Image 1: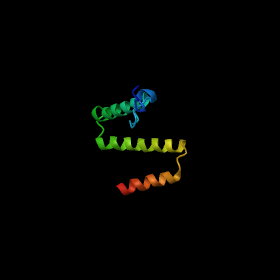
Image 2 (image 1 turned 60 degrees about the vertical axis):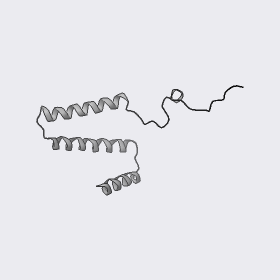
Image 3 (image 1 turned 90 degrees about the vertical axis):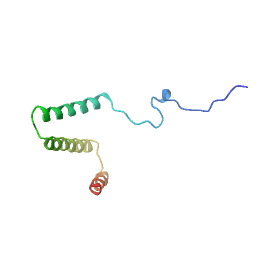
Image 4 (image 1 turned 30 degrees about the vertical axis):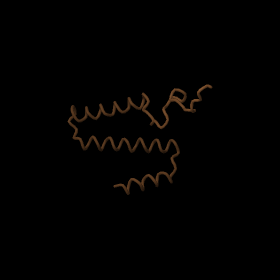
Length: 90
């Protein structure tokens, strides 16, 4: 009598393990490395104070987020929900 194995999905079949999180691709990793490198250079070499570098990074992040939201037609309702969540957390 042959043994019957339960049906399981392996990570080889689908490329990812069940329940695994998304990983960065090469382009995203390069952007993060460049941002961290430029931040370190601004603080160490140029002598820019850390709060100014953090303000620069947060401003750039807001501009990038706004650009992505507008380019993907991010809905205003989702924007209101995100803004409300950010303001109530603060």
